[in-house]
Length: 255
Length: 284
Image (cartoon, rainbow over all chains, first blue to last red):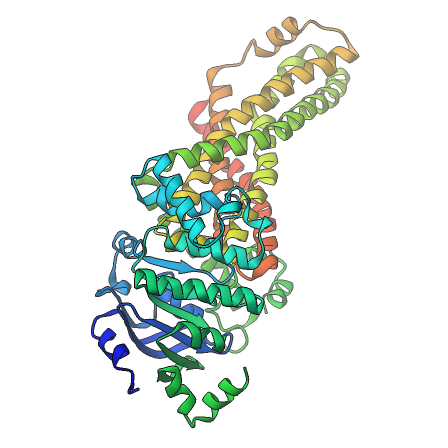
């Protein structure tokens, strides 16, 4: 899909995530029917689509939580489908993942949740780690709730903590699974602001999977619309709006 | 889909099988065929699970802290139940045996019968079944809930191997805690056996113990106590397997918890048949 945006084109020269003819099915249910996309360094790509079209599966494939039936996924130049678990884990340390329901560990406090990746993968002293966790929680505005358990927080607050945890190891790439789903419009806008701030402050490369058009328009450089396991259209949001494809028009109007 | 099949085949394994997407259930196979495939699929998946578990468990880094945490958790939560079950077993065993022995005029054998029965069989099996009720349900539900709420995915995504961190630590904790809990059951069983006996006919503890342990050998005590390591392995592996393979929200968690208990108890009793036989062959 041609893009009019020269800024986006220049970013695309060094793709951090490259997905090629990716196919995945669970039993007889075909979820992805050959997806190809690229995300350049510092770029944010939103993958739009109706619920249950395999968007989340795409994200999980990128980080190696599922194995594809065929096709390749390159993250930072390495094909994650061909790596050993040890090599894959090295890639995973450089990729943050915000899950749809935040997926915080129930039995750990907020502080321990955010500190978990640090505790596992860095040689920080306890004091350094506490300081880093405080910084991360402050950056998402959750420093006051550090000692609470995830069950005591609202959905939006859990997402903020999930984001802080995803950022703990200072990743190059962030994957967002429905960051605004199930949130009220104001909280959703706050999450969008957080994502935008990350892009600005850290030059983060992100893939956002969402069905929230407003959020996609706010946070992304480019969007891709998925339908029945295939990408219907890729380009800037303006390209999407210009499209005469009936499904694209319906999807945009339906929101 | 799954419920219709488990309704057709009234067998516990079908209930326990993880949601399977790979078998065409309506066209190609008959109900029996589907059941057979699922049966072997279940064992195949269990074998793969064990392979992955062993690979993660034997290679460093070892999760010592998490293991200690699980061991402590498991021990402290099972201890009161096991103690109570052991005490009750001692009382019941003494009262019922006493009645039978009096009829045969062999009352003086009572301490020996009670003590042999407890250390050789009742103690280990009661401990294993109580722990399988407490721990297998707990582990199955906990890991199942973590699976369906994507916490296990989150752990993998942050480059931590859940087989190493969650599964290996729990399985090892189950294996090591069972012999210790069995000692508790044995101790309280014997003690309460004496109490129950004394309530009917006073006899000093010293005499009870002396009469009971007179013919007890090393082989009567250690092999049956150590066989509970196998029971612990079964509890740990089955409940972790069920939990890690939970699918489908709260129902999946419920299934994982129930199946963990049912299958762990069943496998413990089946394994006991084999173990009792083996111990008789090698240690008598």
